[in-house]
Length: 294
Image (tube, rainbow, N blue to C red; front, side, top):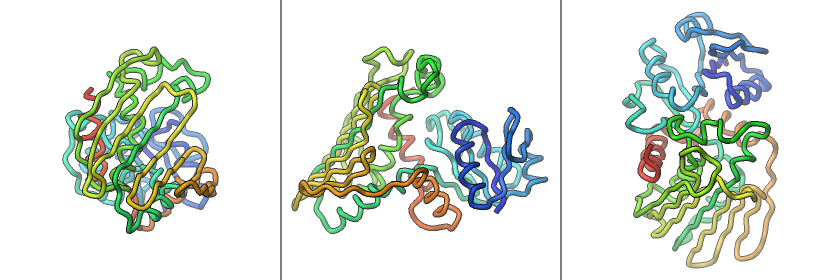
């Protein structure tokens, strides 16, 4: 399959490396020089000369709407995978639902612990779910000044809510469409210039009356953890340690390197259920907008 990747940053390079490793032909659209793959600086030229079967939008989030608009205007109508979050904000997205199939690259839907958690919750009555994710921003990009990264600046679309929007998507994926009850976000540390470094939200869904989500850039012990209380027992899911604990019994769930991306690619390219839809991606952006307005 011929796959065009828009963007030549770390995430675009990861998509390119993994897809090329299983035999797909890769081209990259970027203003910067492209190594290892065919490079284009013009989207029109890339669509005309390369004739992609699939496009991955891995540009900076603030460009996602413009890139999708450009694909539509140039007549591209085949599937598109957009890196998360789908848009910087709803108001800044500048796009209606495009006339082409779009999915969002929330790869943690394919984490084996998430898959095991969903299976463990089948048939149970859920009473409450508590979700926490955090990591000190200085640990995100070793060797770079954290205050110079986009994460540190509101104007660049940074902030912990959008950086950790995986948790917003996973909450809707596991528990169903979300209703926000209340939330608060703030800059309480010195790891950012002006973007929020901590946020909390209280929500509900049809399957769970009380959901709390806590996100931060401050925790020096990285964590991605769920505590789900059901009528028949308690389930804990730890995506960092790759463990699922049911009523105190711990099971380690094997996780191979890049497994979540590889499995997501397989599902998207094969048209399988599971990847985040346009509607779910928009719901995650709208929720982020309410928790931490830019």
